[in-house]
Length: 334
Image 1 (tube, rainbow, N blue to C red):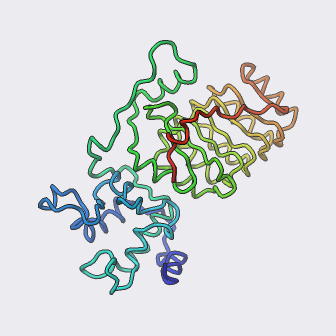
Image 2 (image 1 turned 120 degrees about the vertical axis):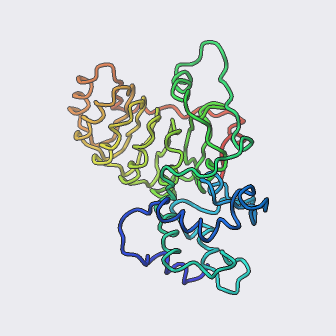
């Protein structure tokens, strides 16, 4: 990738500090310069989208091409879409191929949109074809384990997310898979990549936030700003933030997670200031505070406010997640 591209992305041409609005700023570019070659064949005299790429719907943009996603949320330097619109005029791969290159302002808009997490807002556009969305599989009948029953109840009115969107959200480091086979609810982790996982990786999860039920960010390099995305995970049941640099201000963003049952804050720099927020999580059943900066008095105060809450303030950590031999086949890899 050219040094010019690096420079343009690093130094945005606009002075606006507002987040890019997809419908108002990005979609008009796609409609004017891209739809002619990259839309539903029914809308284009039966012509197949060039390169197998469609840009007329959220699902299709996230799906990308047979070669993989064209955008990496949070990182324009790894996004094929940005690279293609920045090629030299005589390059046969330049997009769009006719009508001249995108203007510097248009390129800047696309780059900032990707940098900010490629948020589509409420826009969906052309939906995925039925064959693109796998039918939900019902869990086993009979009495279910309590946690599975919680997942069944929470996922009752949710639709499964197409696999292409899961792959895009997982990025290079994440693992995204159903909490049980066929469930629309998702379990997300960054196993083996904790040391390289940061805020950008969490931003990439924004597109599937409403379907995430368990999230393991233990030992990652996330910061307080990452919890702004986590706050949108309204179906979250288990959250692991152990050994991260999260502080009291970030914990305040968890106040709206009404289904949270387990919260791991082992070796996190929170103080007694976070006790009020933790106490307000009405469904919370277990919280791990060992080696945090919460004082013994703070832990005791939490126990008194919430007698039914299990407050772990000594060397007892959650057991590791049980893994089956099929996990590697079921998980979403980069």
